[in-house]
Length: 153
Image (cartoon, rainbow, N blue to C red; front, side):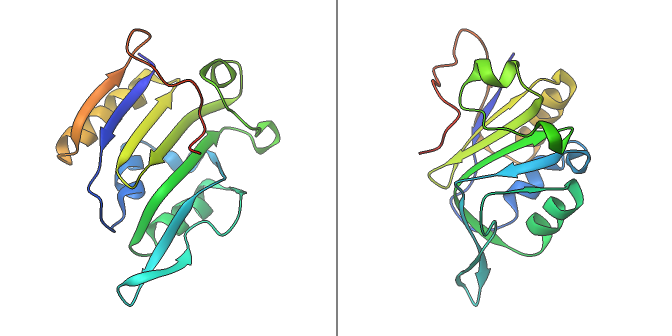
């Protein structure tokens, strides 16, 4: 099993935090890039959740996704054990051959695709998605993975 796909509600909240709380995501360094996500301020889109492409420590990443409600249109989040090994990952093969441990791609506000090298994390994410009543929760396998790139645009 390569990963997991599912749909979250198309509304604001703390969905990234809810999804990632299935495992200890703060142990990683998180590379952001290409996101279109905003904090909700006065019931409107406000400041960017991730102002620019950046590498966040686990604690700094946690602080961003737990600081309030936000609305995510697109997100490309990759987790690495060591900030010195952070690099662009654009295909599944690059993912396998890199130090990247986890990739979360969110497209069109609702469609989440996750890849992880850790099967225990994958099982925990699956359970969390079911408990959260996300829709169309499906494991991604070699047979059903039709994604050609790890890019959201």
